[in-house]
Image 1 (cartoon, one colour):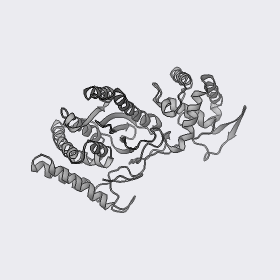
Image 2 (spheres, rainbow, N blue to C red):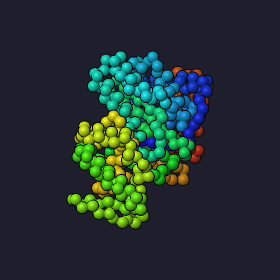
Image 3 (cartoon, one colour):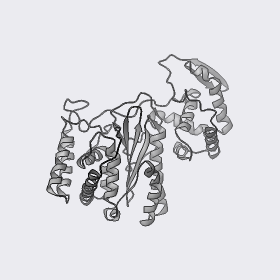
Image 4 (tube, helix red, strand yellow):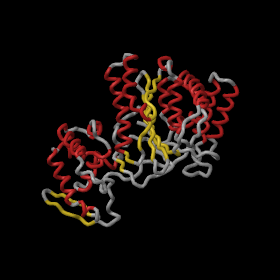
Length: 401
């Protein structure tokens, strides 16, 4: 699965109607040409690529580094194809705020209109919900998801564009998902992650390094509610000791407290939380213990399971059983096509030129007046010039045009 993250300054206010109307008009033409040239599935693939998404937003006249690009571009594209979804073969659900919560109903609505098998439509809904759960619960990076858009084709290709905000740092982070080559929804699902701001306190339970934590969390709830609560009571009993950098070691029935140096101890995000006496958390843990999910994905998919539940299970797994999760922010620094100063790597000229050339061709084939075409091309040239722009995008494995 290809997914990624980009971080932008947090925007407030609304997009002027005159600008939004023009974005809808040009967006309709860009979508038409892209689908005519490459097909619905390729359009889904390209929209899931941060380079393409960012470039398309820039061509449609939005600032490359503004969080509003995400919400306005997806809204403009949704409006652009309204009434022509069947013709295009592409369907867009969800959006910002309250609209994002309507995504499942919109997917099911299209399922009925298209006569999709119920299992197919329900699977799309499941993927939509899981993408939100993974990015809000497993990657706890301080960004609250507030925008979720789900793109899919009749043949089953799908992409998710969702965005979270961090009001403290006044930034937004965008998450991209793509359905191709999905191996595991809960283990290193991102093929490339980029951000302008690297967080220092992140609990990344989707990391490969967190595999033991995921495994033990599943075993903990399957071992029975009383056994799980005994472990929690042990943590509560030694809560003051833990705050002084102590670690519990369990060997059979023997419990040993190990003194650790500051460099050896990672402070778990829930150590400072007073939620062990939460009736709601106890209720969810009891439900999980009763249902005994066989996989961590099933555990996460259980209704009611959220960030606090997975944090609590992670703490028990680490402090008592020694399964330390990853605390490294999965985001990586990179730039659109490299930097003119070769940092973080030299400009990838072939990819850079191919991206620009393809978008130029799409604009040229769009049915808009020459004046609008010229403006779009000039925006494209300016925003992607390596000497002017260092817009972030995914680069763990790299994206091609």
